[in-house]
Length: 343
Ligand code: G4F
Image 1 (cartoon, helix red, strand yellow):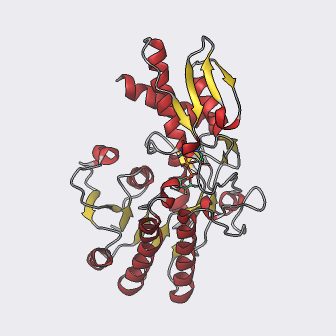
Image 2 (cartoon, protein in one colour):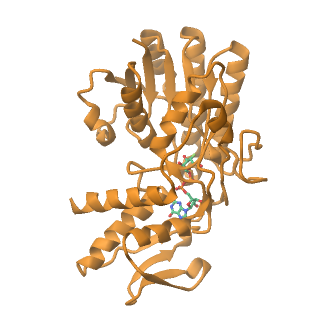
Image 3 (tube, helix red, strand yellow):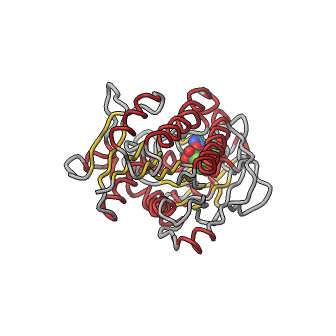
């Protein structure tokens, strides 16, 4: 039985990856977790009794712990989804971001090269690496122009993955995953912040309670949003080609944050009118209750204004396709949050 280490299993991508691997392979999956005094295992609780899934202790910021795991397990695959993945937070804690998203990748690569050189390695890359884009859509040839400490750390990791692949003949890849969302998305990310807040607003409106106003930053930012679950197959395909190669995974569609908000309001059957503009824009229900306002507190020191991916290479060479479209993703997230809050 082959062995796969997956990091970040308590998060959105890691937990979906484990589910994908349990369903589509016969391999044994080791979910690497950091011991915390308060457990954060909600996303993997349902997998606790799976005989092919085992949790192991490992801290990405401790090179020795990582090395020992690689020596002991001799994994066939190592999938690294652990990261400081909140772009806005990377200005508040840039060093922790660099340590986790860049230095830790170097430690993994060193462990693999020294102790398990036939292990295939996937590192989570990001469309944030393209940053201040020069053309749209972005494919694998677009230059790296990061705009945040997070984007810069992912670019550094990308170079390390390439250097190790070329220097030591490792099977090491880093896909460019455009924004991918879902019901397990953290509440700070804009899509889940919107779906969760609008569900709360809907419940408050229906029960005549005080409305918890949604506050967002730059609602004109444009992103290429997909369903995180659709990307897991793409990651696994990237690890199982004849030769290692990096691919873009994306939807090829671009929508503004405003469109995401308005599509969610549509799902909730909330009609609204807009007043003001830019920093002062507000949305009200038709009977005048404030539901949303722009809050410059959520603006970033530097913004990536638009991202739109071209995944035609992944489709052509790996046969990868996505299943959920933009409207389907918004509906899924809103309905899940509404159910969660009314349960
Ligand atoms: O949801 P976001 O925080 O995601 P962002 O920055 O695009 O990063 C995500 O996608 C990347 C792939 O491109 C990943 F690598 C990364 O780890 C993460 O998963 O913000 C999306 C957009 C931004 O332009 C932001 O300025 O939404 C805008 N926005 C507007 N108001 C807001 C808010 N973002 C957040 N988080 N919160 C707001 O209130």
